[in-house]
Image (tube, rainbow, N blue to C red; front, side, top):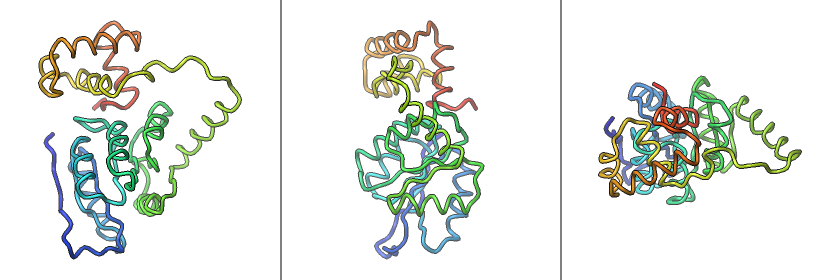
Length: 233
């Protein structure tokens, strides 16, 4: 899906408002969120985008207070987009909005720098509360997500560090290649998109398969879906 950019703030924008960038690849969801947030006097949606790369670019340009980020984003997944936003604009906070509640989705994005994680089944009041909280530099998590984080914290406190989970050692470039593979792109297409040689892409693919201990593209796709790099839709 091509990027869709929304309104760019004018110089007359109210400085007291929380400036929000929406990053969601489903148009109907994105526009619905915009309409709902427009009813709040203290929140201003300054832009909307439909993929992870545009989320990073627009956040760098507009420097919003909060980026509401879908986890499953084309071009650049929500995990790496969150990390890139936090590196490019440290003062901007990222709120993840996702349908996934498994710890394999939650842990990586929190490590990437997200300030909050809200499930898509939540109500508008929860979304508004989450935006306001992360804008104040506070954390906000859906109850189910908070429970996972608490359990994870307890587990780490009572167990010695074991072998790294499969895939935890993937580099940023390897995650990019993996996402494109899972999206059905060929090696030449990936090479053109990332500005690499086909040989380099094939090398990345081989190392990814070795690290994840999978033998075929189907295994790569299953892993990418499981950890939220791509959607199963």
